[in-house]
Length: 203
Image (cartoon, rainbow, N blue to C red):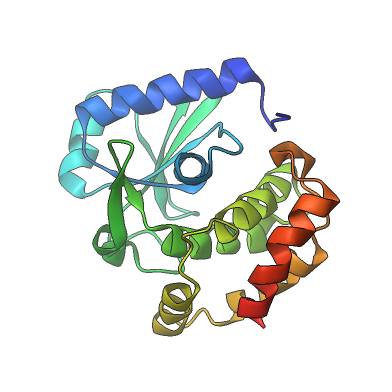
């Protein structure tokens, strides 16, 4: 499978993520959360939602800096960054303090439910669609929404609740426009078959 990052970097990121899980509690969001669900593209950076108690624990492990502009905390660890979103401080399309209520246990991680995760991914894509990261966001979005157990009705409920209804049209457009995803070994025939049933539900 073709990836967006070198295997050495994604493996290093994964090992950092495993170590982090053994030390503190957090909600996993971002690319690694998508990977757990889809087993598609691996990630380079680690995106987490952490409360203030666990932020203090993290500060004993890594040098943590505050990014005032982007309203998050972060750890710069050579090629791998850890982004930390905190309740009542960070800004995401779903309020950060709401995210722990929208989680499941998956592969021994506390992970954002895939329908909420999709909304966060769509916001990231909107902000950087022209970049390499934006191209990966697009693949992550498609790989989530084509999962057989993706709950479209629940996704719509979340969009309405958090006033993000515009992402519904974005999702539909991305599905319609995407013909192949070689990174996921989805050729035109296979993807068209998946899309046929999905588009009936989306429209």
